[in-house]
Image (cartoon, rainbow, N blue to C red; front, side, top):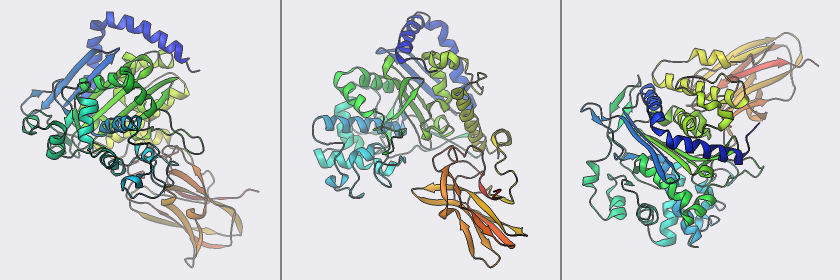
Length: 521
């Protein structure tokens, strides 16, 4: 049973009274856990901070900015926050909306953006502009970048200028600015040369095929979707502004209202932010990563609390399926909750340990365990360790007991086939895994007879959810009468998302293929 939000807030207040008085006792444990996570993910350096009631109660940097020179990462070292930039863009659009210069319901065509007649500004902000606008969530950076054009067409000023005035200078933020390698946007933002800033930003690392960090040139672009430089302290200060400045709080509240599909299903993304209700508490958050950086920002408005963590490689984010809108798949998020929102799930999350699992039996904790197992599977893949057989054996189910024929695909970009024989006429069902991309099946199965004629294809089937990511489907046939003869099952995969590497959450039973079962009636 979920704990009432009011009870959580009261308990959190009592906890925070204790925590602030006992902070020195807990600090070492917090630092130890985050250092263990940094080492597990093989990130050269991480920096994190927590703010509560406008007071930064912890700010710490661990590891190195430059591994060769053994230069430590510091709390004032700006790191690319990647897609957390989107939240700054959303705030600027929200401010312009409040001023009457832009409306969320304006059509993008009003700003000379040709994406179709029905696409609105709110669809760009919520990643629901593809397909039938407003009907389906699909994260899209290139479309989000069109919001800079919305700003320019409505005000004659670009995003960098608005961000400087409406956020960075207003708060103010000490170490937040556009990517200094993007010299035109940087000059619009500051009016200064970017050279001194380039000398002070982070050193970036990518991970090789064995997951070893290797120094690499950092990304050099800035746009509405990504490219802002900041620090963990600045990010939580920004979050505090959103929660406590009177005007900003109103805008932030509007941006983070839960949005739904026409059928009433809640999307994971609002306007520029992920929004998730966890045990009755509203978490507003965003993550980011590019080749040489990763980030996570969490805001808990009900208890005036925020957390930020940055890393100078991308493993802080790419390992976890955060794109699914599942905050507690991130071990950094779980550590934050463990120490700073301990009341969730009756305190069960306070038992979290890096690389550990929850022993308590509940649907919520079992789901977190499953997400952590999937994240471990991704980390093993990035380490070059191949398929995680323990993960596969734990969750693989007997999909088709008594199947007449069964064909599984285990690779991307493959086309596989097997023959099967029918000795006497019978009615059968065909069941095929299917990956859907806006109504088109990119992975699917089909059946042909001995003459090569199509007997059935998943493209003609009724589709049902297969669990995991929403693109995982089962395509199920109507009854098909097979006469005696030889038939062939086929299955096609595209360039991503198969048992070779599940690029997003896999189907619940981990099956990917097609099978035939006899109708027993």
